[in-house]
Image 1 (spheres, rainbow, N blue to C red):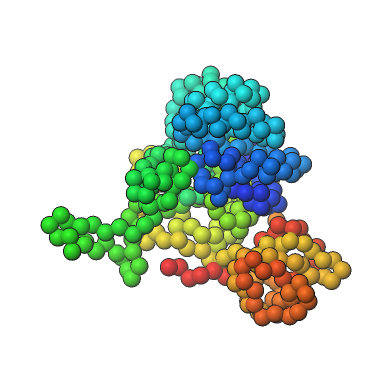
Image 2 (image 1 turned 120 degrees about the horizontal axis):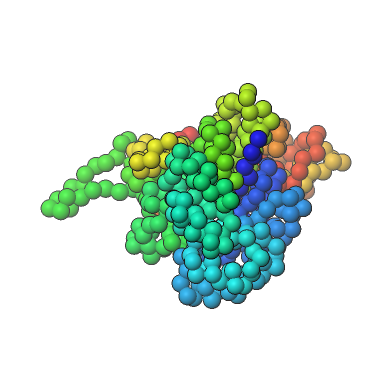
Length: 407
Ligand code: SF4
């Protein structure tokens, strides 16, 4: 059975390692200054080289996003770093701007090119056009339905197609939006969106400036422009049947915990589908896992409906059943304990789970130990501490605790 690549966001080296641990087939990273995400989700050339080496040891591919809408100054900067990226061993560059594409073809002719979803590819002729420009893979526009994706894949089997299956969505057309640029001079099209579509808005009638129309639904407020997040977990058989080469998860700005949970859930689902397609069903456990990470409610987006806009709702707010608690630094087999870096405030006796690629372990938190061996009652984010554990676990494994109630 055709098994598409599971492509995971890696905003930094830690998240890249998380993606490798929990089952990514490929990861995508941001090249500093050129990737449509802020600096917090971009990597230096040294980190990229380290990440590529680690990924390739596990036969995982690495794609670097250079998909900003480039001005000439951006191209000059790109010209300086593209040879370094190619030398670091990346497997492909993701581009949206024809100038960037042409530049990379000249500087690194052997580097595979993927066309970003920002290029809004929605029809067969566009796919053929980009193929003629040397593009090996096209990340389809998010506005396509599954029926349209299936038709495209059948019409141009010589081109790899990639589609988003999970993650946050913009209400703007394929993310082309000036809301952030116009409200606070942070351009989404240059990788610096401040997400003002998620802010609180009120409507004023011109002659009644002191009398806003109250749009709130409850004691909090409505996010009028904010889309629900995409989740196609329940439709993997139909998606795989389209013939797309890769399934992409959104979220280079999200936490390592998000990367761990979402990668593991989709990895398990895709493996189960490939192993036994006739008896496959979407396990409730996978859906429950996806509820455990921060999201704004889930929607199937445009997958089954060609004419609608992204689904929004006054009730759309960030929700999550769990929060990150820590990350494993090393296992001490002699003392049967695990060294953890806290990623949250934790108290003794709090319920904490350790996420491994194939199982969850409920941790004994009766005694938290500082590195000195002293017993402590609580730790704060960034503190290092030990918990007892009678099992060797890999560095980079994530811990979580029960989350905050919905806003
Ligand atoms: S402001 Fe909202 S809709 Fe516009 S690009 Fe940013 S996230 Fe997307």
